[in-house]
Length: 451
Image (cartoon, rainbow, N blue to C red; front, side, top):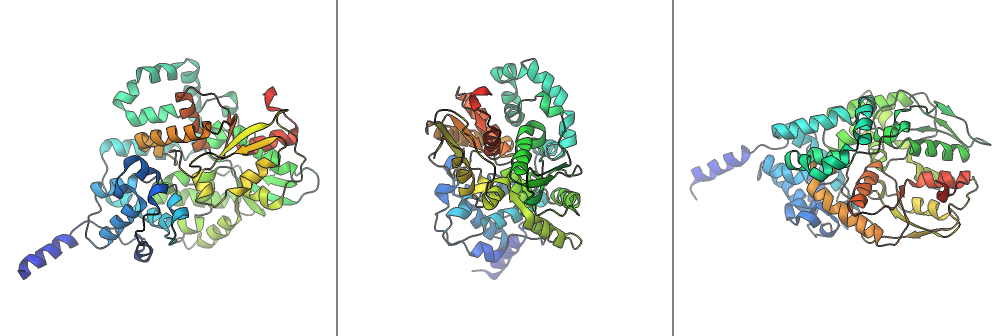
């Protein structure tokens, strides 16, 4: 072969835009993949799209190729990274222990820094990242959203499909709007809630963003259940977002700034544990040591903070319930528990929620088909990739309905909104509740029929 041609080809490869020097995907982690394909059937994006490059194995191929200048880091390659839901089901399924979670977490900031997006994509993402991680900004939207819903406009907008025709992503966002109630406008959680009876623990509690505004009843139930089981609950008013949303989408600097604020808000609270009741938030909170690994002022603080973070069901399962539980219904309650991906795959928490629910008298727990498959929510994935998310949502709801359960328990607000959307689309009215609310009702002796 002509040496000049060989040299030119090598120069062309080297000129491909590649990962920058700031924490690119670790080649050792890439090399751990033996390309066996066990991840394929567990990957929701591969199931829907059906292309190798939209599977964990395919994305690892791409990471390797970009690392070796055999493929560019470009719009064409980054779309396959964008199609990943980050559900982490592949990490559970992988027999080789490939740390895909670390690989995709390293790749997303690289894409955000180095791959230009279209104007429409940039504007929509800016809307999301400027709004959702900031509860005070979200609160400003409550009044117009309340009026919008009370006037019955959602039904008109969805029936005419006007947004779907012109701005599909905005239509996806609109279709997931939670119901704005009078409670959404209130911010009445006290800073300290004493333990009932003998104090066993002093715990901090994180309120979340969407959770505190649209699912405030879950936070109230969490505080009551912790208190009823001997925990003094501390709720710092200065806390903000957990950083899950920007972290999952590669918004590195924003995630770091938000994480620092959260750490500062719990400094000097002297709590035994920091409790979170939202699966996606909990996974990110436990990753603070990684998120702030380059910050000399916060590295150790972040590691200490993360070591104290516990999902509320994880915590209650560990300390044991001391409060008496009463039946929620007179007849057996057929209940199906929906596994949130960042609880099941990210935090390896599966048994504890089921064990807690089974302690409630008259509860009969049923298991759905494909319980480990993502519902399609994945943070804001159902807004950024609505077509894939909708297909997954339909599958998830059908599997839940097929159990014959009369109530669905879900531990994550994003999953709950996604499931409620697809229940409505299928014309079903099965109630959905966070497991902690069911425990709260059981402790207080409230029957579901009276609600």
